[in-house]
Every structure is written in structure tokens, then in C-alpha cells.
Length: 118
Image 1: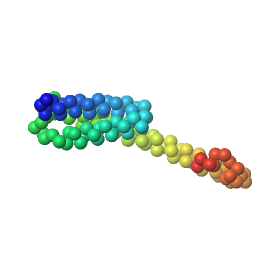
Image 2: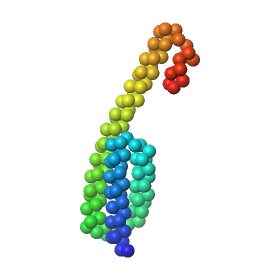
Image 3: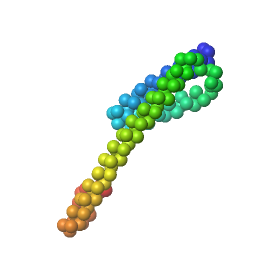
Image 4: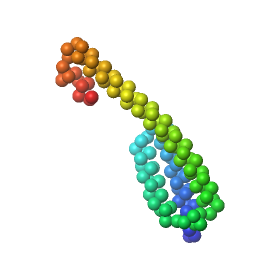
């Protein structure tokens, strides 16, 4: 197999992983996203062994497409992270409000089942 065939095959796999990454972000499947990122990291190590001249026209086109796709996935992930961070803050505020209500009514922290989770 020629080097250009190898690089194109690796880049096609990277594209498949990037598509799956997009789906994982949409589904908020963080475990799957981490697995995919690990696989892409492994591929990156393999691609690092090649020089620029080892890429044919299809490979160079795939690289360009992957750069765009990666940028889009990164933006989508940042948006999802902002949403999740907001949910965490809302949960923290709710837990704080429950503690304040408990204190106002004289409940001891050990008396409240939910206190064990905060």
C-alpha cells in the first residue's frame, strides 16, 4: 500500500470519528465522546508519522474538511458545556436555598435526607 493510500484511509477514519463525535455531542453522550476523542488521538499519532508530500489530493481535501468539522464540533461542544454549567449552577442554587429554608425552620443538617447529597 502506498503512503498516500495509508494517509487517506486514516483521514477517512478520522472523518467517521468526527461524524460520530457530532452525534455524541448532540446526544450529550460524554462517555462516547471521550472514547471517540481517544481514538482520534491515536489516529493523530499515526498521522504524525507522515510528511506533507504523503497526502494526495483527496487527503488534502479531507484535511480541509476535517478542520472545518472540528471547528464546528468544538463550537457545539462549547455551547453544550455552557448549558451544562448553567444546569450545575441552578442545582447548586437550589441546594443552597434548601439549606437556607432548613436553617430558617430550625432543621439540623442531619435531619434532612437531601443534605447528604450536597
